[in-house]
Image 1 (cartoon, each protein chain N blue to C red):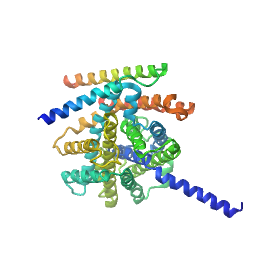
Image 2 (cartoon, helix red, strand yellow):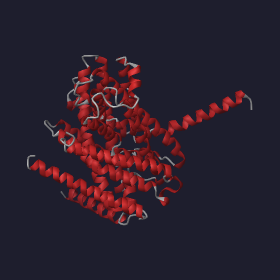
Image 3 (tube, chains in turn blue, red):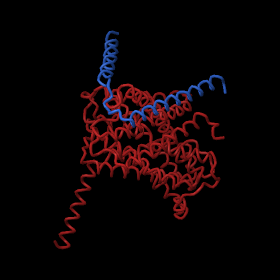
Image 4 (cartoon, one colour):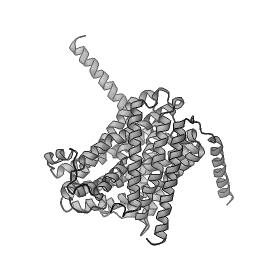
Length: 62
Length: 422
């Protein structure tokens, strides 16, 4: 059990280190990059919304 | 210089070029042939059965599309020496990094289940029980990577790519009419007109052309192989050869099903092989072998794409040049993926339709992000230097990426909402 907990602790520690290491995006935020990332976020939000609609439809038996 | 000396000089140059190409070639051919995976074979078989030869011309167009997207991964990998997952973390930060890697891992795992479904269905045609097939596949997949040499893995993978060409002799068994095939290569509407079903098939074929795992896989392979900037021209040629092979295989599958199964409803490649067996047992056998091979190659490449991505981000040793003791987590993840996907296939009444749906949804979420990151990275001066996208590259690639995003999203919407096109 202790060994499993150690592995889990190590795993979460590794995630924290990765987050720290890649905290700041290294790409130069030109208008093109910013606009692309914004559009990507909007696209993903729309995708999530569509999936939610589907989920609700399936739940309601449509 | 006399003619003999000139000829000798040119022959030497060609021989040298071919020698270097033989050393550099691999990632492009493997990724493109593996793209014709179990799902892809099913799409092509269904395309032939529904439209005959009338969509052959469209398949030819998909070759350049696949090439232009994958060529960017060759440049990015050779110049930055980073895999795609690491490049996203490094350039766009941990939010986009985690988003990409988690989506990749989930989508890859689900896609691998569909590969195992294809593999077991193909072997069931020969009377091999699914459990035996899955164990046999695990052994083959283990043997492929546990040599501790990238070179050995690549040669075995190329051997499986060669087997994928079995669809070519299969098509010659049915003596297709050359005139009809050539006619199919001319752009035309299908016999039934521009129906919703036709558009669905078009989107399905485009959807199988570029998958998110391919971008991650080829970039990681280029890095693992140690390709450098000077190898980029050979990497391009490798990708061109691969894209030609992928189109050739697709066309020959359509030639078979377009002639013998035209007008029938083909729901899977295994079903097509079963239907072909009474018509010509060699043909049915070839189709089943091709499906087994496609699923196997797809599963190996997809699992490796995820393992490389995790290794890059977590800083584990993540090269096929390492043995299992040197890169334990890399191989542990590779086998974990394979064992989990294979085991799900063996569960009776597993929700396979739901899994297929999820693959499509996952790809829809990930593909635009992976493609957009690719374009942005290829336009980064500091990262790419003189290897950044030229104006021509940008016009072509941005056009392709925009079209791919729109069409693959449309395809996914029709999969999620099946009544959308009715």
